[in-house]
Image (cartoon, rainbow, N blue to C red; front, top):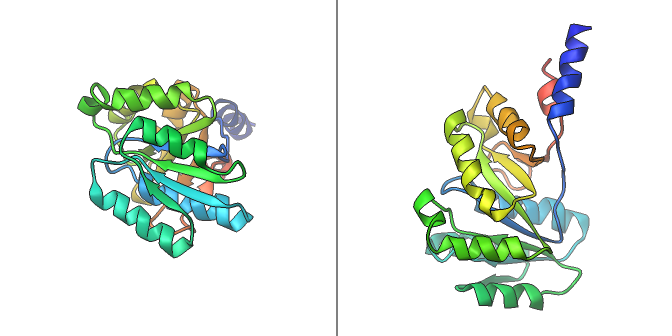
Length: 211
């Protein structure tokens, strides 16, 4: 009875929302795995479901990130475009076919960046009601740092969290605590570099099955 009550309490507090909006942007700190996760989503949520996919890169800080996405897009056979300004991003979004899963990669943003030029990007994504923004965070991050990072990205008004690098921690309780603290649903879990196999829609059973 105690075990069942514990599981029920976890499931009550731990909200999940698997899936993506038709236009989805990934934001997060440097090194959180946004680019790799975006490619996994392009395959699992787009190509494997017979949906046309288009990839946009708004990451002007790291040339390597844009080129990495360009190469992946070529391998997947999907259109790719790199944009350097907010107006160009808006134009690229509006020009995409209405039936296309549009995935937007953004630069890894440090605390200093969020107080500077990235504020324009945050404002743009926040104003666009048609964009589904997910914050990508790493599961091994210390609880205090996880909270600080998530709080910083609140300016994007995200609809969900994605946790990566689950294969690098044996104590994933921090991600549950953070999701419960902010009452933000989790959309996906990533547990490795494999594309697309190391990505799974979030579920409460991820935490409750070991109990």
